[in-house]
Length: 144
Image (tube, rainbow, N blue to C red):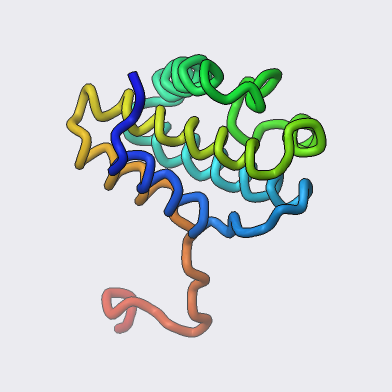
């Protein structure tokens, strides 16, 4: 099943927001690694680490069907060398499209359980880059 355009758009926004505007292999690998770590950590908290691994495995299988640039990649961003090699072999646009398709499949599969809109919001929250904390600002609760 192909993800809806809303799901694919959300996955593309997430890629771009994470810093995915480069065509350099090392930078694509870095962004994929960051996105993979953020999704694994964030979604792992919500659905459990084992459930996330299963979800990601199914998403990779589904995304590979139309994105051969994902061949050899077993986890999003887990192996920078594999991502760099994929970019050199298949080209940056193909690998980025494959990664976006993989994230879209994660959203699509999760959406079957919790609903598409909720899955989009959850993945966006888990995968969104975190703003840097401003030094010296404390919460009002911590002041005497």
